[in-house]
Length: 556
Picture 1 (spheres, rainbow, N blue to C red):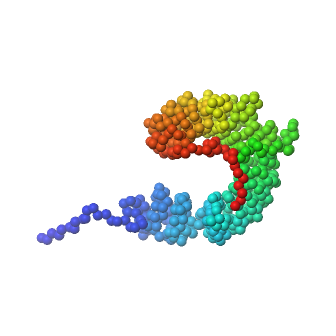
Picture 2 (cartoon, rainbow, N blue to C red):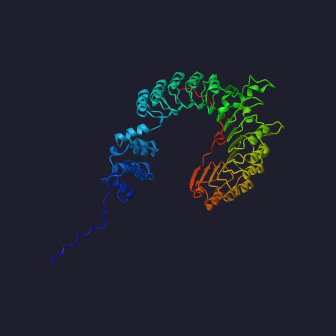
Picture 3 (cartoon, rainbow, N blue to C red):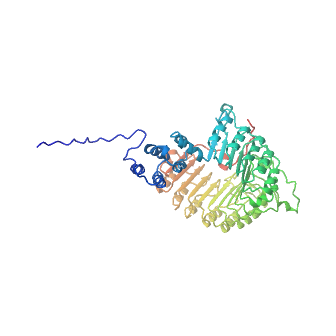
């Protein structure tokens, strides 16, 4: 009897995976799905799409593309499935690489792309934009940003480029133009073809005047968001009066538009009733340039009888107010505020602020940036005191985010800050504060940190220029039950020993240390899961959110 020996299996041998793909062992679930979809009797198309979509949902975007390319021919996949794959890819470079896989995928991606950003290097601009916008005909959001542009980058987008945009993108509803010095009123008038335009943001557009804004206001009847930043040529405000009467603006942001004063905003009239978000900011030496209101008559404040009951988000930064003059009237009209930023406003009256807090019971976020001034009681201090904090604590039970910033306050003169440590702790312990920023609070010391350590909701704490908080305060704050994010900037009394206590607690998710000269890079290691460290000293303007030395930029 002849016995035939069985061939011995080679041990340690593993089939090399196909180049560019994955081994069967590494992707069992995708392989199973692939075998089902390639069966002689495949399931209905919608079922196959549902199965593959469920399998690829947990994979990174490029792996999804590679697996699909490995198991199928792109031309055989249904368009809804391709569109679903594209929607899951958010990185532009990955999306551009994916378009090289097949012509069908490139066409589907072009059809479903809704947003695009154009910057330096698009040259020649008109031809490049024509090709670009012809391919992506369903764009609804476009940003053109020439920040950092130099002549070596080539030509900028001009009026002809805006014409190309308006003709090829009929669905455009959101447009941002930043540092586009070659676009003027004629170019802006082409936006009349964009009937669905709802949001327009202009940042440093030196050639655009009030005429161009007025044309947009008249032709774009659905315009609801308007941002004008550093638009130095806008002076007259007929456009603002028109939008107030006939427009539907819900969001208006004006920053460093020197030709628009806070008194001009009174011409917005009925538009204040519809407005939900408003920002007005002037940088530079704003306290030296304020003009009196020519329309104000003592005893006849009829021009300030304006309703803004729907205003939810208000930010006034770097302005001068006087009794019954300027944007100060807003503080007496708002009832539905959820977010309030008062940043270095000269002329605040504490009684008006207290009354505002008592009306706005839905307030969730507040930022108060204050500096000492000569007050009505002849004290040199910040305009608000503990009375304001008490009203805030009693009237705003939904308050979650608080920022208190003090500048030009000498630590050796604690009375220059109208608040006390007790008043700050009363506010924190009375409301469900989750995020707290204390900037320049020399009155806040380790005893205050002890009070913070017992708060039940505090998750994020930023201490900036708080010279009275030491290592003992770090030991105490490490006991806070919910604290997970801590930032220390220019805290000169905290050392590596204080951070050692944070490292032992193992509670922090993130720790940021900037400009603290007694804290070393070695000292922050292990204090949190994510650590950001810098020994560089920040400027006063950066720390306090000021721009005193703003220069008027000229167009290139």
